[in-house]
Image (cartoon, rainbow, N blue to C red; front, side):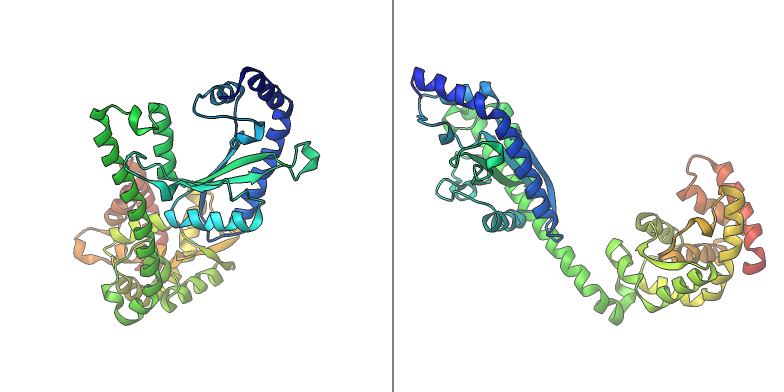
Length: 371
C-alpha cells in the first residue's frame, strides 16, 4: 500500500498523463494490428485496448500487500489484449512482439508456465512494453503498459473468473474449488483439441490432390475436397468452356461452396469421382444449358452474364446438378417434378408454388438442349 501522501500524488500524476496514455495506447494498438496483418498465416481474433480507470487504480494503490513508490510501478495503466484462435499462435505473436516492440522482459511474465492447482486455468502471456519513447505524447521514458496474449477460450475463462470475483485459491469456497479445477482442465483440453483438429485438417488438405489422383472414388465431397475438385482437369476445362460461352473471364473464387455441396448431395453426387464422371458424361449437355439458363434468369430475376465480372470456379457443377436431375430417369418423376424437388429443397423450402414455377420455366428453357 502507498502511504497517504504518495497515494494522492500517484493519483494526481495519473490524472496528468491519462490523456497521453490513452493516445499512446491507441497508437500502439494500431501498430500491433498492422504488424499482425502483415503475417497472413497468423489468424488473430481481436486486438483491444483498455485504459485503467481512476477508481480501479485507486483500489490497486490501496492494497495492503503491494507497495507502489512510482506511478510506473503499476504496469497495466494501459492494457492491450491480443486474442488468438489457437494455442500455437500465442507464442508466434509473442516472438513477433519481442522482435518489433520495446519490451521490458525483466517485468514480463508467462503465466502459462506458472499454473498450479490454485490457478484455475488462467493462462496468458504478459509483456510489459515501454511507452515513453514516443515524445509526442509527453510520456516519460519509464512509462509502460501491458500487452496480454491469450486464446479466446482463455479469454472467456478470465472474463468469467473476473465476474465471479475469485482469483486466489484461498478465496474460493471449497464446494466450488473442485468444479473450477475440472472446468479449467476441460478448457485446456478444448484448446489442445481445437489445435489438433486444425492440424488434422491441414494434413488432410495437403494429401487431397494425391488421394484424388489415386482413388477419387474413395474421397467424399466436403468443403476441402470440393476445393481440390475445382482444380481437376474435367471441372476446370468445363468452367473455362462456360466462361467462354458467356464471354467472361474465369475467376479465382468458388461458386458458394455450402450451396454447391447441398446441390451435389441432392443429386446423389457424394464423392469426387462421381463429380468428375458426371462432368465427363454430361459435358456437352452442360454447355448447351448455359445460354438457355441465362435467358430464363433474365426473365425471372433480371440476372445477366453482363452483371458478372467473372465466372466463379465450379460453376460447371451448378449445371451438372441440373443435368443429372433432368436425366435421372430412375426416380420415376417427370422433369418438372424433379426440378421442383431440387428448388423446393434449396431455394424455396416454404414456397412449393414458387419452386414449381421456376422448375416449369427451366424445363421449357432447357428442352431443346436436354431433350
